[in-house]
Image 1 (cartoon, rainbow, N blue to C red):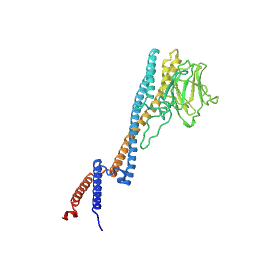
Image 2 (image 1 turned 180 degrees about the horizontal axis):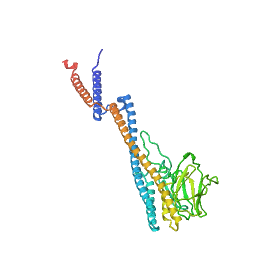
Image 3 (image 1 turned 90 degrees about the vertical axis):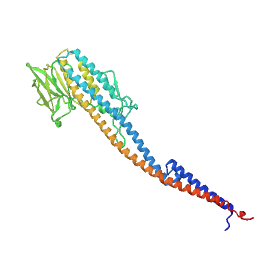
Image 4 (image 1 turned 180 degrees about the vertical axis):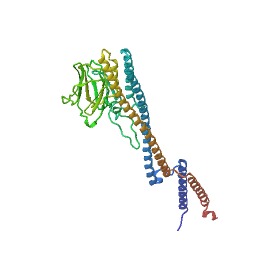
Length: 407
């Protein structure tokens, strides 16, 4: 077969260009430190690397989300701690208001202080995180979840947020606490029934908060205790106002201060000296109250002047009830704070989990994309030596010509 000189030159030049392109490509891989610079380098490896990059991106997104949730929960936990302190201070003021030696002026001063604490607690309940989200808005619905509605009945607070609590997942935490359950679901009275003095009572009779003695015997009915002077002896009778019938064994009972009254699975203690016509109402605690109303009721009780013994008895009764309800509300705030602390602990666990996943995905991505620089440099030097040898041999061969030997 005859090989022309031109064909030999063209073939050699093509091989030299190919070797030079391989050398440039190898140099590019070394300079980037990547085995995969473009998909054509390894189509299968490139597809796998893209999958790993997507997983790594999701992990990094989850890490940013958990950081945001941690910040919100830290601020919510701090706010609940502040709220707990405010409630404790309010409790101390209510206890002070029960001091029999205090006059109307001292009690009004306590009421003013208590009102300031109530306003502070209201501000805490509406607190926002650093991103402007309500910390106690539940599932959302309003940037200011707690609204004070003025008008009939005084300053009542309503919840304009969305009640409910987001659930924590393996990689996400809630960014808000259900303020409705925390501040607005305080059980009235002892949680089962409420004892309330008649508005026209003139005696000093009062009761404790009461308790349940037999849960299965409870009827859920309304009752009224009536006091009457019969032949100079103070007696009481209990009527089931739901059925309008007297309670068996509780009619015409001689009253004694400190006595225990028990019927239909409930009991309470009576103190003080009632007057004829005084009453005591007993109603089921079906509807919860809220911390703001509890504090407002205590404020109203402290501001009520003592015109007669009936006013003092009602104030003592109302302050005792406010203390019980405030303690129940405090328990709910502490429960929410404990939940926030638990979520912060879970955030540490999730962060460790996501950190391990990030390390695994990064290592897998490096295995697919990164170059072994020692091997890469060795291959580059081999290709370089091969190119130099080819160029030198070509330089020598291209000088060979038949015309050099014809003279």
